[in-house]
Image 1 (spheres, rainbow, N blue to C red):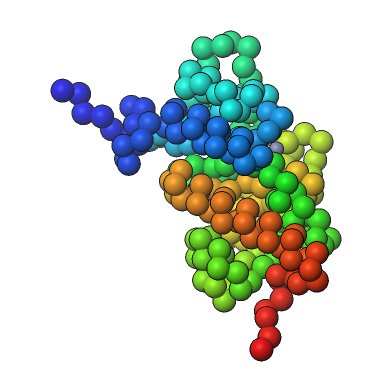
Image 2: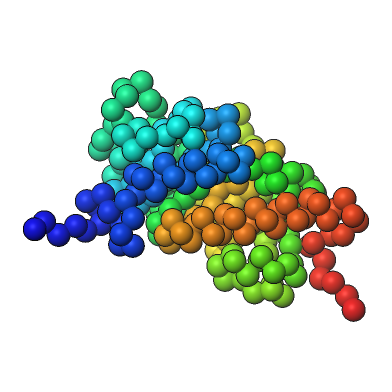
Length: 223
Ligand code: ZN
């Protein structure tokens, strides 16, 4: 019997990447992260990269709708529907795969992420002393979570160089925010990327809600 291995359409954890992308898209749509055809999801399958196409109803995504790229971003397989276009996020996703050896990259247009970028004019988002920060790799409860914020550009692909520079400047970060736009999050597996994205989104939402109460999550609590 042919032994399944990574790159054959099944991941080390036994999940099938095409189905994982579609399921994550449905769940993220329900969270408001990929509504209006926005956002994106990409997974590594061995040396191959699977990526959701641009401008599609993410909650209706089917396994045959995905692009398959090589490690350099060249298209190996196109979706069954020839009218589908590669995501404008592709160059940004590739930076996470190359620079961070990510297994999965998620791009969300979450309202909480967008609002969190507008809490200050600083080029970073800061938070500390929130339990959910512990879900972000490399962080404990007392640590300062710092997520770089890029200024948005009219075309998403024009963010790629700034994203790469932010990864270099912030070697500990698992995410990069884009002001008035959303957030890119990565992890060594789709499970890690999903968990990190959920924890970060909680912290972004908490920061926005607590600001209304006059509480600044960037400040270490006293007493
Ligand atoms: Zn976007």
